[in-house]
Length: 214
Image (cartoon, rainbow, N blue to C red):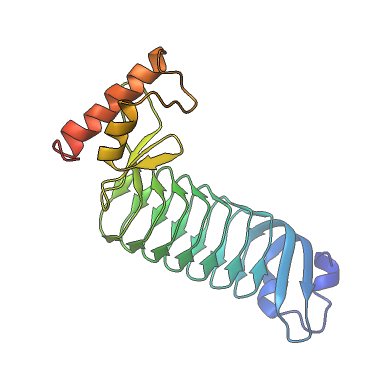
């Protein structure tokens, strides 16, 4: 149903009628809302399932976000399964997967995904990849942190397990030493300039970040 059809539905909740949006919505006999696609311009989302679309502004009070783009507003609680977060304030809830580009994380549980930038104030980080940003407090349980090097290699360090990720391969420092001493190749030829840069970045992680530990 489009917006004009939705607000006439006998089970349409008042918060959905009051909000500014356009798209495709279904409502079951209990009043449960499923937003299939469209654009949410402003208003308060109280409960239901968001499948896809663009969220421009407003307050998310609770519910399940399955995918789409978040461009601004306040997230107060609920489950985020996947999608792209461009900016805004996250106050509470569980993040399952997706890409975070900017914004402020106040509290909640991060279960997986990629964090590119923004401010993390509190909460629990369970797993995922951290590229950059400001970490101001909270509990880090597991995950990989991007290591900046002069060669701009895709190299990450897990500060909990001391595992190193180069490209898409994950090994302990000792296993990486064995691999570099072997003749095995992945995508980068051993006789290339790029391979030498990767090895130099690996040694930097061992000596500077891990203090020579293997």
